[in-house]
Length: 418
Image (cartoon, rainbow, N blue to C red):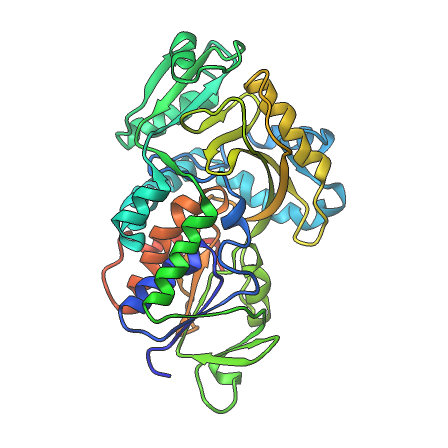
């Protein structure tokens, strides 16, 4: 058992932690009831954003909460029945929007996200990375002619980290994105960012490399984590699944939005909320942008992919158990048509998944105090494809006793007072 590792979760974060450990010679088992990229790692916007340094929580969020509750078609809604359960997380989220905290979070985002391209290349190798990633930049667009307060704050944060960006007027936007609505008046080109043409294939290739390195992947559901002092004979951390008992010296919880439920029986409480996100995949689109578009007026992201054009957005806070709202997902087609007038394509495919979101937009990484051998790697919210690989690298570095690529204190669970 010495040196053995169990990783709970076969998404981008879990596999990004498991693969370096397997390559270092550890006996690593990844457990997940779904195949790789079965959850949020499958349905995300596919953005690879090393230059993303702006947290979701921002000053002035408090005044927007009543509008979200009253507008069922808004970009972010909280289902009324779930509000009492969501209220503590929402309060932490609002508090994380204080400017001094925003600056600290932005610094921590840069330290982690800025490593994403290098980490992806290390994990996949040059050939797979070239086949699956596009480093063509991203574009943000607005319908307003003047700079909004939020956009000015974003500009300040980019300048803080020396991030290159090109301001585009309406003509410049249309030159870069033919077919975009004339309602768009200005844009911003971020050349350092990119995207993947298939989140599904990208994460599956992580799994392939993990298996090739000697790792084990089990399609089982973790029912309970039992600590060494309660695991009976054999010692180590025990994971009771629907099919077996598995033991290891080290346990990494990378269960995405379900991580909170996994840890609660241990008395470990995490301010983690499931931000349910929707996507619409339009096959054979008549308009295919050359690079991703973040539409600030309509609160959607549009990404060109192998299977078609993916529109993502419309966040919903309703917990893990509520059924999807297919009408909300279908509404993305109207927003996509407003951005790209006249667009047509095949039959759209709808999807909903749960983003594991912390109040401050930073993941929860590293060891748990007082719980030797237990490590955390979850909470990437809107930035999973970007933050997952460097997070996995940071956690694997800590387990292997190597120098981590960023200061782990910024992402530790105890920042929440837990």
